[in-house]
Image (cartoon, rainbow, N blue to C red; front, side, top):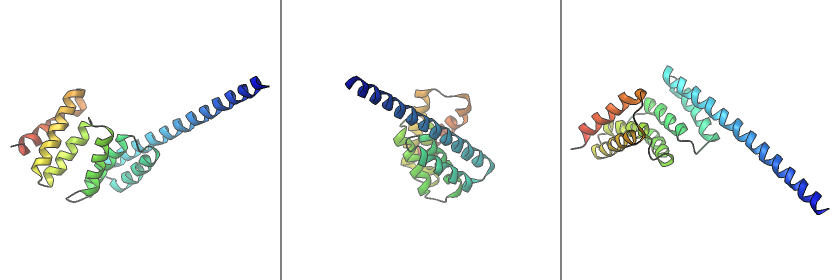
Length: 156
């Protein structure tokens, strides 16, 4: 009788695990779909549509830095100085991924536009360090150069 009980418990535990994994995969697929839609909308200039998609993606996965990074990019195109939502999203990105070179470079750009040389210098320096730590992908070469330029302008 005890063996039967434990066998049933084992099977139920396995089913719960399988169902949980299936839900997680579906959630991840939906996150990725919304992230891609948001990026595409940024590229076409539909920033409000991008923000809507990206904020839905964040609700699905609050621990994925890419949702916050791309939301920050969309807000960056719509906000005016001092860019509160933009910075909030980039800071959240960095809290989840302290080596997110793209977020640091975007922050450096915002701080430069806000005329906050000290913060622009710090963010640009962290961007460069993160790029050099991870390696600079060919598609990120221009962003790396932008971080170098921002560092040269703001670090005195």
